[in-house]
Length: 377
Image (tube, rainbow, N blue to C red; front, top):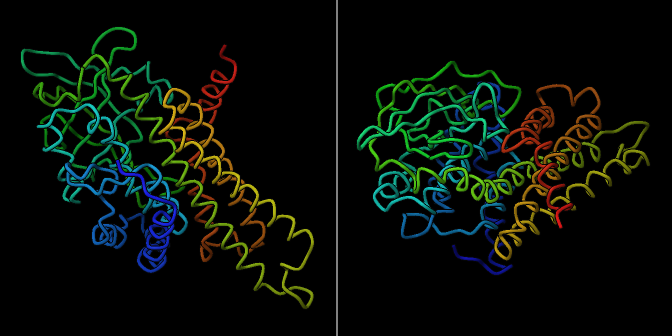
């Protein structure tokens, strides 16, 4: 995918920021309060050709590289984390399909998603395991020219909304898995009740239940024995995008804290003049800027050294999401009692930040990956 020069990246950032402020931010509180899809944001994304941003031009997309994706999600999450998730989920879901899928399957799935006609979802996590992908129990059994899938996937982002579900299923012993494209209308597919979540409330999450779902062999992504390897590569590319969401939330909370402390008067002056307040603002800025530097470094590593990049992606994901939780908590504190009210965005941002420490691999798992990299010979 095409890399851009620095000026082009910054122009792109400015364009996305204007879209986020004008088209996304005005609806973010309503999306959270009503737990509804960010339809206004999605329309704006379609109009701006952002839905197909990461997909190659020959697949109907815009051919944007990983840095463009990170910048885009960072700016959108700055005002609405739900809208960011609704945009990038299909991006990271279809990465293995773009890399390893057949031309026929790409045409059937990627093209419509890139044109904003269809939506995709990952089916990885299960009721008894999330971070332990090797413990996946959903099975795919070959029967003639078909595969039969059975199992339950839990906490599936875009469940009930998505048209296509990329399902990681066991095809053999140990770490032998395949990735299978399942359509919501395939017989045997059903959904659990929508989860009532702490944050990113406008993004639907539910179980996806597979009961003797029979699909043709043409719906397998690449080699049905190499799904685990595909996932490892896919997660290295998707974790920086999730890190960008976390970074955007943190930047948004810092923006709100700066604005509030400059306006809020106590003892005859803005509280931004008080030394302890200034110290908190400085610490928040340090965390945000250092996280941004680490994230961009990780993106560079993915392009330059894919072997080392896995650890850098984990560092970026961990640092940015920990920063999001810390900075949003401090932003609420700086708002005082008002920060605890739904009238102010920092309350929503604090709730939204928490999931970034959990999904796409918990930060505890990320630390194990980082330690393995550091300690290896």
